Length: 406
Ligand code: C2E
Ligand code: MG
Ligand code: MG
Image (cartoon, rainbow, N blue to C red; front, side):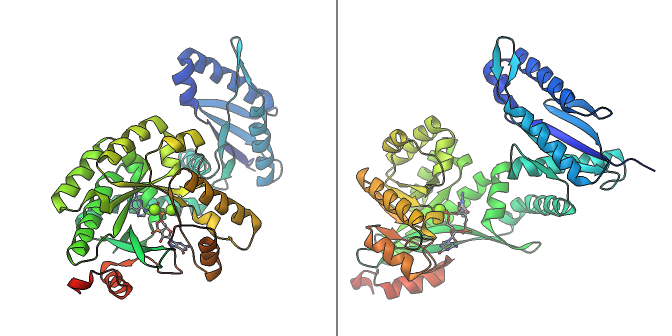
């Protein structure tokens, strides 16, 4: 009878940082120390080998079931709580594990390794520092991602993308003061693909740059058309991804897009997420300063979901903060969300910024935000994102149109 084996693929987290900051020889010594610790923690008869880079392959014999592999995996990960001695210093590093069973999960060694890699990639994405078992669902997810990736660029060329607009309502007079442009993809292969699925893939692949430029062009042209029809002072917001923010090319793109359309810069807003800005704050500051110099508005999106240092927040050339949907969910219901939302509003105002809340769905949320001085509200309560034609009907009813041109 074949002995069931668990194949564990272990990868160090952020090992590149060690190499980059402390040098390759320290990196090498760290790998040796990790190898030593791993083999110390294994049972007699189990084995560990370095696959290359910072990846280690471990073979663990199972007397019982997969649960036993989970116990071993956790024990190995726990052993990273202690620092690794390297020369005269101590280095802390964490690791992530992908696990597959042999022969239960795969046929040959090749496919077993592939599955361990898949489980590792999944763990890295979902739970760095933890472990994941391979499951056939991962196979489907990988295939789906592959399909989406392969169809992004052709999809843009075939005109499968569109832009929807969601109104932002002023709490002062209840009128539409702005619109957020949100990209939509109707793929003949995969159907309606939500942005939460394709935007991260587009970012990974760099496709976000041409796609983002297309959204910007489309939204700016639409805003100019509305301006020409007499809908004045409507500010259109376009989301920028971290990848776009990391490159000064975006400044030229925005400048040229505005010039080509004739839309005044003051009627464009760019939304950048707190997380993207803070990922490389010095670089972000540089790009944001240049964008602000063009005269466009800047908004800090998903505020509260990342970690802004207050000193940086004060230096960012933003006009608005947008409170993350997560904190709007239960305002007026739980004290936690209410306290956070109230604090965010007060802080924004202290910094001289306008505060907008996203994701408001109920009358309770809306009246809480209203009562607590939030300046603008966006959410299904007023309207979901809709195609331009439908929004136009709403705008006309809203009285945003210049009376003379009505
Ligand atoms: P975001 O910028 O925070 O956009 C708000 C999201 O919340 C949108 O999801 C919107 O449809 C949704 N939403 C609005 N009101 C409500 C509500 O009352 N309840 C709930 N549950 N949801 C609401 P969407 O369109 O799926 O977009 C998701 C994210 O994808 C956006 O988050 C943004 O980060 C990204 N995204 C969308 N379009 C673009 C784009 O053109 N470029 C870039 N870089 N990112 C985009
Ligand atoms: Mg946004
Ligand atoms: Mg948001």
